[in-house]
Amino acid sequence: MGRKFFVGGNWKCNGTTEDVKKIVSMLNAAEVPSQDVVEVVVSPPYVFLPVVKSSLRPDFHVAAQNCWVKKGGAYTGEVSAEMLVNLDIPWVILGHSERRALFGESNEFVGDKVAYALAQGLKVIACVGETLEQREVGDTFDVVAAQTKAIAGRISDWTNVVLAYEPVWAIGTGKVATPAQAQEVHFELRKWLQTNVSPEVAASTRIIYGGSVNGGNCKELAGQPDVDGFLVGGASLKPEFIDIIKSAE
Ligand code: PEP
Image (cartoon, rainbow, N blue to C red):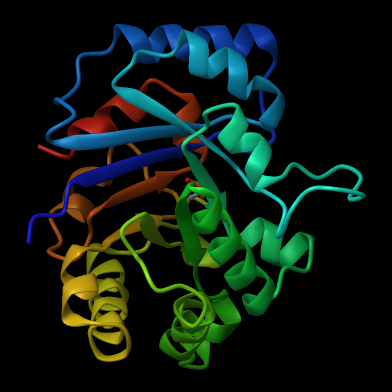
């Protein structure tokens, strides 16, 4: 079953109105493979979502970087899934390691968020990944399996889910996983989906890699059989993001 290559750009908590205009102009001017070959989604901070959505080329889409776990209400500072739907924002990133580590989001909380966002009609980039400590003691697969299980136990339809494997030690550190390291975990994650969800979901769900992907290392990573694209942080703010999109070909 064909899995369309997926490239997400996570702008994190960066940018001014001027920066955003420059990045959008750069993206709009780029020559990239067609939508049949690659799905591109950029994720600016909430406040810039409407302007990016309205000024971005129509073949690229936008994602929020987070959303609240249930219906909106007295949750100061939060943004609900319903609000994103109301603004026609199609995607949301959930379970990013920065949210897990800095804001205490547990596996269960992330699973609840994924289930709620999907139920509202959003598409979800769900992030999993181990810390360096966990990798060093050989727990990588147990950690990502537990994170994936907390999502799988709460949803029944994976059509609108992209699973992002993002080892915490590789995020923003310049220490990218080797293609073999990425492939090993992606393969295990797919096997986990096959055994615990279904062979169809395992075959069709995109598993993308994130962690210090750049214009120089993307091609080799993209060549791995179970790497279906990327979630890109730092490099998504730079022209090399275009090279990363082009690694789909
Ligand atoms: C991320 O934040 O999802 C990420 C992968 O960051 P970076 O590419 O900067 O490592």
